[in-house]
Image (cartoon, rainbow, N blue to C red; front, side, top):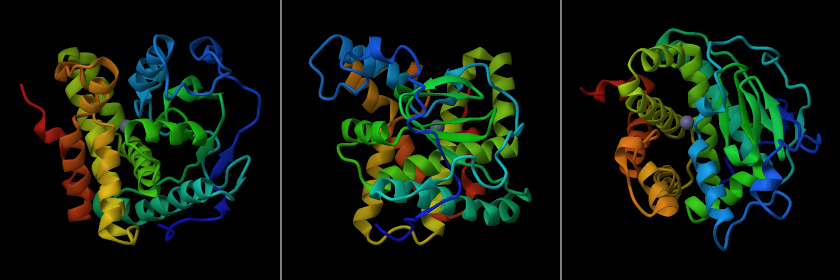
Length: 295
Ligand SMILES: [Zn+2]
């Protein structure tokens, strides 16, 4: 997949090597912060559980709420990147293209203007509008500062562990999913859901799952609407990525059992289904995941 790779890093805020180690990392992962895959026992497994709990889950980072109180997210990033390596060019490509897509799709489908933002690259840890983040949080979106955060190296290790390989489509799906959360923030969905969750804690997980599945569906809508895929096999790569981060798969890998009550992101089947709904309809208004909430 080379189509949407880009060397334009004007929407990347490159904070790598800024010396913020994020605390705690060393103590969790003996060996200086490199992620313990494949790991032997004990501490490694704890690391995975801690990390997976936060995977793609911005709320865990803290009490950040609110919408669009953007600091410096309009226009270009503070430290624009050079997109050189394959992975950098993939992430730069998605960052640019998915935002071009929403610049058209949000007015078209939701009658709402899109607000540009940036992807932050960091290593170890970084300070965010949602509190201190470290690499093992996984890629995430912070609604308080509207930024997508990603440790590139760590993301690849994560993919290899959860999805079986690090593919272009996996990277693209993950980034597009995080930008789906940005769209939810612009639409006010994030704030509405947080209010409902506070008023009705019993349904908090159902709403969390609906948020995540909608972000999957939004990612699918982008993949479907743009000329992202070169062949059918690449669609399978994207589906494998969506399935690989299903709560049931992750629980099976980390706990050896599956507990649907505790899901916050949805099962592999749900994630595949909603990704494909976006992909097939190319209509983000069809991403009505909240309609499925019951009881
Ligand atoms: Zn998410």
